[in-house]
Length: 115
Length: 110
Image (cartoon, rainbow over all chains, first blue to last red):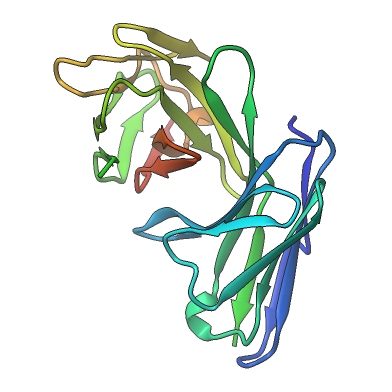
C-alpha cells in the first residue's frame, strides 16, 4: 500500500462547471502524476509534478490544470468540464527503491461523468 | 520515441490454461520494464518488473523475461485461475514518465 488516496471517488457534474480532483499521499514522495484511463487508450498522462509548485504537461494536458502547494497533495482541475473529459482519473506516485529504477504506484481512481 | 505495444484483447481462457500476453517495446538503451494489473474497479497494481536484459520478473505465478534481442517482455502464467481475470498493462519508464500499453483484458472462465 503506497498510501495514496483520491477524492472524490465518484463525481457527476454538468458541462461547463469547474471540477477539482484531489490526490493525497502520506509518504512525501517527490513525483506525482495524473492520468486518465479511457477504453482503447490505456493510460494517458495529463500532468505531473516533481516538487512543490513544480509541474509539467503530459500527453493530454489541454483543458486541465494542476497545483501542488504541499508535497502530499496534488490537485487536478478541469476549469470548464466537457463531456470528452468523462473518464476515470488516476493519481500515481513514483518511488525509487534502490538503484536507479523508479516504480509507479497508483491511487484507487476517480470516476468522473460530465453530462 | 519510446513506446510499448501489447497484444490486443480481450482474451478469454478456461481455468488452468496457459497464458501469454505479448509486449514489445521501443526505447533508447535498456530501460526497466514493468507489468501492472488492474482488477475491476481498482487502480493499477505492480505485478512484476525486470531492471535489465535477461532478467526474469515473477510474482503470483506470473513471469516475464526481458529479452533485448527481440525487444520483448511477454507475460506468462502456466495455469490461470478465475481470480486472474483483470486488465494487464505493460509499461516502460522513460525520463520522469511511464508509457503504458493499451491494456489486455483477460477473462478466465471456470
